[in-house]
Image 1: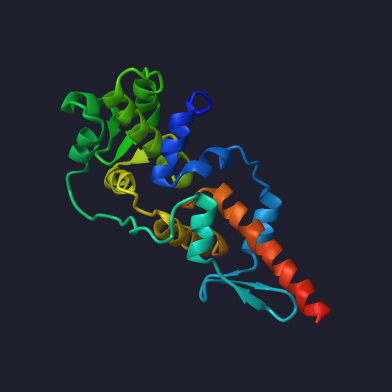
Image 2: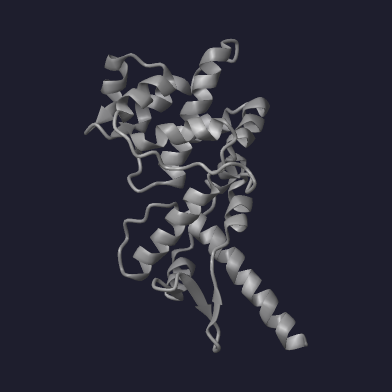
Length: 224
């Protein structure tokens, strides 16, 4: 996946903007500071869904527009939504134009796709085939969603992401889903669970944003 990201052409990097994922390529290289992360998580109130900072327990909560800015998607675009349905294997086949045998060779348990063969299938596609390049971009977006943004099970991609890729292709905004999964992950982390459904890097970047926002307002209030 790292070599695939490094091999992206300028046009492909621009096209990632269509999906609202351009900054994700850079964020993947962020080093996680687990001490900072856990220190901030202890300040999260899983009942009120807010952080409580300082002696006065000032409340701060994630904002939709802030998440959109971090990820790079348009907060005014139609929201990408989960589609509850059956037949995700067919969605997987259709998304990448696989035959049933090709798709089933990459799927385990009828619900997850193994990312490595998908990466092998599309990472070396040549730019002189526009149809394959379109499928390559879809595969990259699916891998970024599954292997980084929603990394509950690294190395595998939930087939329920397939309809989401289609919506993102139509300029749908993924900020709402990322925000919901971030709040859910913060709740679970504060309660002692470690099976988060969103990338720890996303949590860290957002927590740094909130931390510096708190520091700014603190010094602004002191100066009044």
